[in-house]
Image (cartoon, rainbow, N blue to C red; front, side, top):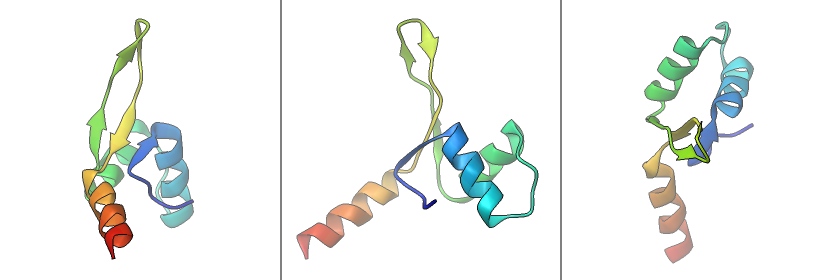
Length: 68
């Protein structure tokens, strides 16, 4: 799995398991995401809290490749 602009907790935990020896927990996954430049985004939809990690730099990189 590769890093994307927006990832769920499950996707980030899966990426962490594939690339590190650490045990996944909410704290360790959050620190791992922060090390890679992600920020937490928690929107509420239909009274339910969703949980994403968002890295705005990936969108800028993708756009710069398309413009060349």
